[in-house]
Image (cartoon, rainbow, N blue to C red; front, side, top):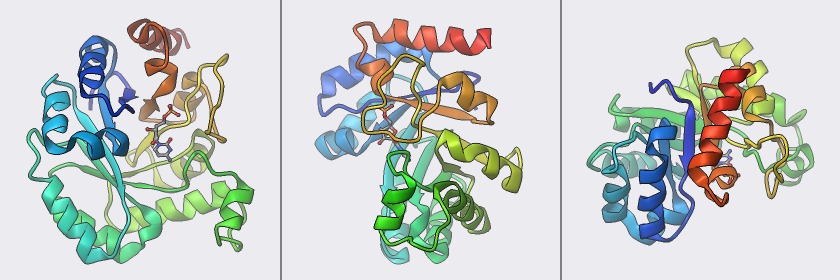
Length: 233
Ligand code: C5P
Protein backbone atom coordinates (compact mmCIF):
# COMPACT_ATOMS: atom_id res chain seq x y z
CA UNK A 1 0.00 0.00 0.00
CA UNK A 2 1.43 3.42 -0.89
CA UNK A 3 1.90 5.74 2.11
CA UNK A 4 0.05 8.51 0.28
CA UNK A 5 -3.71 7.82 0.70
CA UNK A 6 -4.88 10.08 -2.14
CA UNK A 7 -6.44 8.33 -5.13
CA UNK A 8 -7.19 10.81 -7.90
CA UNK A 9 -10.30 10.08 -9.97
CA UNK A 10 -9.33 10.71 -13.60
CA UNK A 11 -12.91 11.33 -14.67
CA UNK A 12 -12.46 12.61 -18.22
CA UNK A 13 -13.12 11.17 -21.69
CA UNK A 14 -9.97 12.96 -22.94
CA UNK A 15 -6.95 10.63 -23.21
CA UNK A 16 -4.30 13.35 -23.40
CA UNK A 17 -5.78 15.15 -20.41
CA UNK A 18 -5.92 11.95 -18.36
CA UNK A 19 -2.28 11.12 -19.10
CA UNK A 20 -1.17 14.72 -18.45
CA UNK A 21 -3.06 14.76 -15.14
CA UNK A 22 -1.58 11.42 -14.12
CA UNK A 23 1.95 12.65 -14.89
CA UNK A 24 1.56 15.96 -13.06
CA UNK A 25 -0.12 14.33 -10.05
CA UNK A 26 2.22 11.33 -9.76
CA UNK A 27 4.45 12.96 -7.10
CA UNK A 28 1.41 13.98 -5.02
CA UNK A 29 -0.85 10.93 -5.07
CA UNK A 30 -0.74 7.27 -4.09
CA UNK A 31 -3.13 5.94 -6.76
CA UNK A 32 -4.96 6.94 -9.91
CA UNK A 33 -8.58 5.91 -10.39
CA UNK A 34 -9.76 4.95 -13.87
CA UNK A 35 -13.53 4.84 -14.04
CA UNK A 36 -16.32 4.30 -16.51
CA UNK A 37 -16.07 7.68 -18.21
CA UNK A 38 -12.47 7.10 -19.27
CA UNK A 39 -12.53 3.31 -19.74
CA UNK A 40 -15.63 3.32 -21.96
CA UNK A 41 -13.97 5.97 -24.14
CA UNK A 42 -10.46 4.51 -24.39
CA UNK A 43 -10.60 0.91 -23.21
CA UNK A 44 -7.56 -1.29 -22.78
CA UNK A 45 -5.22 0.96 -24.76
CA UNK A 46 -6.14 4.07 -22.78
CA UNK A 47 -5.89 2.16 -19.52
CA UNK A 48 -2.37 1.01 -20.47
CA UNK A 49 -1.30 4.60 -21.17
CA UNK A 50 -2.52 5.89 -17.82
CA UNK A 51 -1.17 2.88 -15.92
CA UNK A 52 2.14 3.33 -17.76
CA UNK A 53 2.64 6.59 -15.86
CA UNK A 54 3.51 4.37 -12.94
CA UNK A 55 1.06 4.78 -10.06
CA UNK A 56 -1.08 1.83 -8.91
CA UNK A 57 -4.51 1.88 -10.54
CA UNK A 58 -7.92 1.56 -8.93
CA UNK A 59 -10.04 0.35 -11.86
CA UNK A 60 -13.49 1.54 -10.73
CA UNK A 61 -15.91 -0.23 -13.08
CA UNK A 62 -18.39 -1.25 -10.35
CA UNK A 63 -19.45 -4.56 -11.91
CA UNK A 64 -23.04 -5.59 -11.16
CA UNK A 65 -24.48 -8.63 -12.96
CA UNK A 66 -25.11 -12.34 -12.44
CA UNK A 67 -22.21 -14.34 -10.90
CA UNK A 68 -21.12 -16.01 -14.16
CA UNK A 69 -20.98 -12.73 -16.09
CA UNK A 70 -19.14 -10.86 -13.34
CA UNK A 71 -16.63 -13.69 -12.94
CA UNK A 72 -15.96 -13.77 -16.70
CA UNK A 73 -15.62 -9.98 -16.83
CA UNK A 74 -13.17 -10.06 -13.90
CA UNK A 75 -11.09 -12.68 -15.68
CA UNK A 76 -10.91 -10.32 -18.68
CA UNK A 77 -9.83 -7.44 -16.41
CA UNK A 78 -7.13 -9.63 -14.84
CA UNK A 79 -5.53 -9.89 -18.30
CA UNK A 80 -4.85 -6.12 -18.31
CA UNK A 81 -1.18 -5.12 -18.21
CA UNK A 82 -0.10 -3.80 -15.82
CA UNK A 83 -2.74 -5.33 -13.56
CA UNK A 84 -4.94 -2.94 -11.61
CA UNK A 85 -4.14 -2.76 -7.89
CA UNK A 86 -7.84 -2.52 -6.99
CA UNK A 87 -11.04 -3.61 -8.81
CA UNK A 88 -14.64 -3.53 -7.62
CA UNK A 89 -18.20 -4.82 -7.80
CA UNK A 90 -21.48 -3.63 -6.29
CA UNK A 91 -22.22 -5.42 -3.00
CA UNK A 92 -25.93 -5.39 -3.92
CA UNK A 93 -25.02 -7.97 -6.58
CA UNK A 94 -25.16 -10.43 -3.69
CA UNK A 95 -23.04 -12.98 -1.86
CA UNK A 96 -22.73 -15.50 -4.72
CA UNK A 97 -21.76 -12.82 -7.22
CA UNK A 98 -19.08 -11.44 -4.90
CA UNK A 99 -17.73 -14.94 -4.22
CA UNK A 100 -17.55 -15.61 -7.97
CA UNK A 101 -15.72 -12.31 -8.47
CA UNK A 102 -13.25 -13.18 -5.70
CA UNK A 103 -12.58 -16.59 -7.29
CA UNK A 104 -11.93 -14.93 -10.65
CA UNK A 105 -9.61 -12.28 -9.21
CA UNK A 106 -7.81 -15.00 -7.23
CA UNK A 107 -5.66 -12.61 -5.23
CA UNK A 108 -4.23 -10.85 -8.31
CA UNK A 109 -5.72 -7.51 -7.18
CA UNK A 110 -7.56 -6.13 -4.17
CA UNK A 111 -11.26 -6.75 -4.74
CA UNK A 112 -13.62 -4.36 -2.98
CA UNK A 113 -17.38 -3.79 -3.05
CA UNK A 114 -19.35 -0.57 -3.36
CA UNK A 115 -21.74 -0.42 -0.39
CA UNK A 116 -24.03 2.63 -0.63
CA UNK A 117 -23.04 5.30 -3.16
CA UNK A 118 -21.97 8.60 -1.61
CA UNK A 119 -24.50 10.34 -3.85
CA UNK A 120 -27.42 8.58 -2.11
CA UNK A 121 -29.33 9.85 0.93
CA UNK A 122 -31.68 7.86 3.20
CA UNK A 123 -34.64 8.99 1.04
CA UNK A 124 -32.83 7.87 -2.11
CA UNK A 125 -32.25 4.30 -0.89
CA UNK A 126 -35.85 4.01 0.36
CA UNK A 127 -37.14 5.26 -3.01
CA UNK A 128 -34.91 2.71 -4.77
CA UNK A 129 -36.68 -0.14 -3.00
CA UNK A 130 -34.61 -0.61 0.14
CA UNK A 131 -37.56 0.46 2.34
CA UNK A 132 -36.63 -1.96 5.09
CA UNK A 133 -33.16 -0.45 5.52
CA UNK A 134 -33.10 1.78 8.62
CA UNK A 135 -30.79 4.32 6.97
CA UNK A 136 -27.78 4.54 4.65
CA UNK A 137 -25.28 3.85 7.45
CA UNK A 138 -27.01 0.67 8.63
CA UNK A 139 -27.44 -0.47 5.03
CA UNK A 140 -23.74 0.17 4.28
CA UNK A 141 -22.70 -1.80 7.39
CA UNK A 142 -24.81 -4.78 6.34
CA UNK A 143 -23.40 -4.70 2.80
CA UNK A 144 -19.85 -4.39 4.15
CA UNK A 145 -20.41 -7.43 6.37
CA UNK A 146 -21.72 -9.36 3.35
CA UNK A 147 -18.64 -8.31 1.36
CA UNK A 148 -16.30 -9.58 4.06
CA UNK A 149 -18.27 -12.84 4.25
CA UNK A 150 -17.79 -13.26 0.48
CA UNK A 151 -14.02 -13.03 0.96
CA UNK A 152 -13.49 -9.54 -0.41
CA UNK A 153 -10.61 -7.33 0.70
CA UNK A 154 -12.65 -4.25 1.54
CA UNK A 155 -15.34 -1.78 0.55
CA UNK A 156 -16.05 1.57 -1.02
CA UNK A 157 -18.06 3.59 1.47
CA UNK A 158 -18.99 7.11 2.48
CA UNK A 159 -16.97 8.80 5.20
CA UNK A 160 -20.23 8.77 7.19
CA UNK A 161 -20.24 4.95 7.18
CA UNK A 162 -16.64 4.44 8.27
CA UNK A 163 -17.00 4.35 12.04
CA UNK A 164 -19.65 1.62 11.96
CA UNK A 165 -17.82 -0.43 9.33
CA UNK A 166 -14.52 -0.22 11.24
CA UNK A 167 -16.33 -1.22 14.43
CA UNK A 168 -17.91 -4.27 12.77
CA UNK A 169 -15.11 -5.44 10.49
CA UNK A 170 -11.84 -4.40 12.09
CA UNK A 171 -8.79 -2.40 11.06
CA UNK A 172 -7.53 -4.74 8.32
CA UNK A 173 -10.59 -4.45 6.05
CA UNK A 174 -9.69 -1.98 3.28
CA UNK A 175 -11.85 1.17 3.17
CA UNK A 176 -11.77 3.27 0.01
CA UNK A 177 -13.66 6.49 0.55
CA UNK A 178 -15.11 8.90 -2.02
CA UNK A 179 -17.31 11.92 -1.21
CA UNK A 180 -14.21 13.85 -0.15
CA UNK A 181 -14.46 17.62 -0.17
CA UNK A 182 -12.05 20.19 1.27
CA UNK A 183 -13.90 22.39 3.80
CA UNK A 184 -14.67 25.21 1.35
CA UNK A 185 -15.58 23.04 -1.69
CA UNK A 186 -19.02 22.54 -3.27
CA UNK A 187 -20.58 19.10 -2.68
CA UNK A 188 -21.95 18.90 -6.29
CA UNK A 189 -23.82 15.60 -6.81
CA UNK A 190 -22.37 14.01 -3.65
CA UNK A 191 -24.61 13.97 -0.56
CA UNK A 192 -22.66 12.21 2.21
CA UNK A 193 -19.32 14.01 2.20
CA UNK A 194 -16.49 14.85 4.61
CA UNK A 195 -13.17 16.65 4.51
CA UNK A 196 -9.99 14.63 3.90
CA UNK A 197 -8.93 14.98 7.57
CA UNK A 198 -12.37 13.91 8.86
CA UNK A 199 -12.37 10.82 6.65
CA UNK A 200 -8.86 9.82 7.74
CA UNK A 201 -9.77 10.35 11.40
CA UNK A 202 -12.77 8.03 10.91
CA UNK A 203 -10.49 5.26 9.62
CA UNK A 204 -10.24 5.68 5.83
CA UNK A 205 -7.37 3.85 4.13
CA UNK A 206 -7.69 5.51 0.72
CA UNK A 207 -9.35 8.83 -0.14
CA UNK A 208 -10.89 9.08 -3.61
CA UNK A 209 -10.71 12.68 -4.77
CA UNK A 210 -11.93 13.78 -8.19
CA UNK A 211 -13.17 17.25 -9.00
CA UNK A 212 -11.62 18.92 -5.94
CA UNK A 213 -8.28 18.16 -7.62
CA UNK A 214 -8.94 17.73 -11.34
CA UNK A 215 -11.35 20.70 -11.50
CA UNK A 216 -8.81 23.00 -9.88
CA UNK A 217 -6.83 25.51 -11.95
CA UNK A 218 -3.69 23.88 -10.49
CA UNK A 219 -4.39 20.19 -9.81
CA UNK A 220 -0.90 19.44 -8.44
CA UNK A 221 -1.20 22.31 -5.97
CA UNK A 222 -4.71 21.16 -4.93
CA UNK A 223 -3.36 17.66 -4.21
CA UNK A 224 -0.40 19.09 -2.30
CA UNK A 225 -2.75 21.23 -0.21
CA UNK A 226 -4.89 18.21 0.69
CA UNK A 227 -1.80 16.23 1.67
CA UNK A 228 -0.40 19.12 3.71
CA UNK A 229 -3.75 19.40 5.52
CA UNK A 230 -3.57 15.70 6.39
CA UNK A 231 -0.05 15.96 7.75
CA UNK A 232 -0.97 19.07 9.74
CA UNK A 233 -3.90 17.16 11.24
O1 C5P B 1 -15.39 14.39 -8.19
P1 C5P B 1 -15.63 13.50 -7.00
O2 C5P B 1 -14.53 13.62 -5.95
O3 C5P B 1 -17.01 13.63 -6.43
O4 C5P B 1 -15.50 12.04 -7.62
C1 C5P B 1 -15.75 10.89 -6.87
C2 C5P B 1 -15.34 9.69 -7.66
O5 C5P B 1 -15.56 8.54 -6.86
C3 C5P B 1 -16.11 9.47 -8.95
O6 C5P B 1 -15.19 8.93 -9.89
C4 C5P B 1 -17.17 8.46 -8.61
O7 C5P B 1 -17.48 7.63 -9.69
C5 C5P B 1 -16.48 7.65 -7.51
N1 C5P B 1 -17.35 7.02 -6.53
C6 C5P B 1 -18.21 7.72 -5.73
N2 C5P B 1 -19.02 7.08 -4.83
C7 C5P B 1 -18.95 5.78 -4.69
C8 C5P B 1 -18.08 5.05 -5.49
C9 C5P B 1 -17.27 5.71 -6.40
O8 C5P B 1 -18.26 8.95 -5.83
N3 C5P B 1 -19.67 5.17 -3.78
